[in-house]
Image (cartoon, rainbow, N blue to C red; front, side):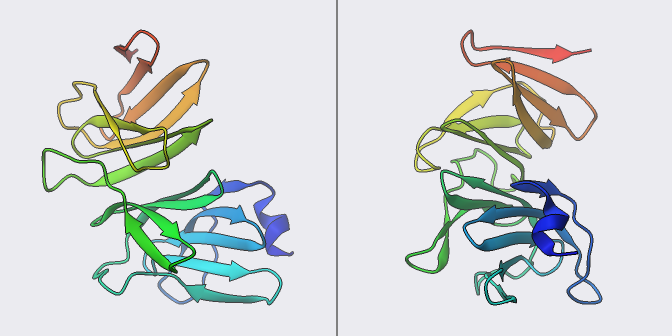
Length: 184
């Protein structure tokens, strides 16, 4: 089976096949003729469909290659990295640029990353939601009062952001009213 057939969509979650004995691919996204894949042990891999080849696209300063999420937004690749925050691939410079929102805690880890329309959304260990309308150049901090729980996932549905946390709580944020409520 060809890899694009395996993916079957623009973004797929948890594709499990090995590139080495210790690396499993987690998230994948297609941009042009390349498939970008995050992994639990090898950072980011870029597969070229035309040349049937792959390359690692990691930063030399990454001591640990824990990429927790990967998406395409406005024809750009974005990732969350366990120790380096939110990053955007700069294809013209062939490098990752750190676009992590300003956080109050140095130890904040970012896991969640998603997009809807023009908005890029991320969240992490400080229990806050961050929204960007310009590809991560500027961030708006949304205080959710989540008691510093790690935000594991974010989705947008029917004009609301839904935020899932590490302690199995689900919160709903309405950007029009600014209200946050815990879902039962």
